[in-house]
Image (cartoon, rainbow, N blue to C red):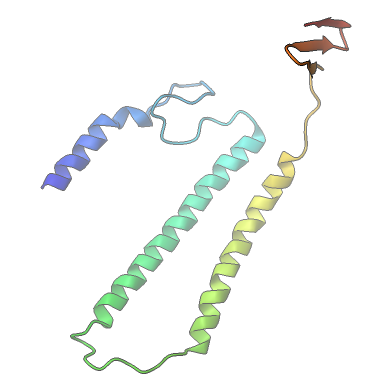
Length: 148
């Protein structure tokens, strides 16, 4: 009962966290997700983040179910005499290979995004900023203008 009230209070108090300003590309106070992407690369990153969240959730649910099964199936009441088995080669191969395959799968989606980020678009303006000991100098070479 107390947990339910606490959960309902959290949902009511943080309800505004899910509502962001419409059309603005910036973060908002109490924002719970990433800000709206402003470029195609950022859109791919946000989509990849959502994909990773699904993969992580599936892994957590699988491990939680496996642990619940083990706790029920192999408790002391059902198995008064524990098994003396210490090695199971196929099981060890599977729990080594499956995480590798998951990481390769994730890498196949993340590496193209990483390579896409290395392409720097041409700038609209060139600014040369030089740091001196106590001040900065700024130059605009295209406009032949500068100031300290």
